[in-house]
Image (cartoon, rainbow, N blue to C red; front, side, top):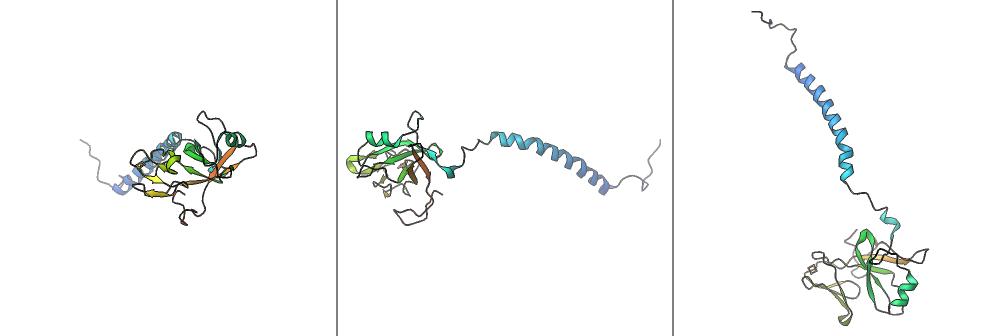
Amino acid sequence: MTQIPASSDAPNMGRRQFMNLLTFGTATGIALGALYPVVKYFIPPSSGGAGSGVTAKDKLGKPIAASEFLENHKPGDRKLSQGLKGDPTYIIVKDDGELADFGLNAICTHLGCVVPWKASANKFVCPCHGSQYNENGKVVRGPAPRSLALVHTQTNADGNVSFTQWEETDFRTNEKPWWT
Ligand code: FES
């Protein structure tokens, strides 16, 4: 029987490990390369830069024209529309009949129910666990920990109501906004 002599010609453990590293390192590289587009595929596409703002839409997804909105709503009204990131957002008509320059994200800061406006009480009252917010969306009763998020409201070049992100100080609490 022939036996391979334990000569120094056979690669030692260190060399074998080096070859392992080379082979499996390349294989891992190929695997990662193939995985990258797959992972990217499952991340939802962005809805376009939020910095430029979005047009407010009604429940059918139609843009809301500011003049038409003001014709159909009276001072003090707060009406839901689709706002930034598709969140339900209140458009507010001021007492002088003009659009308020801020809107309110209607998602309750407790667990996320949409909070209805209760005109008779001049408050937003959450039906889920009873949190209340004043007419500007400031929390006045828990369990909700924070006020409703603000957005800027304006009329864009097409005459439609549009929203942009509110990054300035919260005028209701004089604090930094919690939602940015
Ligand atoms: S979700 Fe509004 S009070 Fe709980």
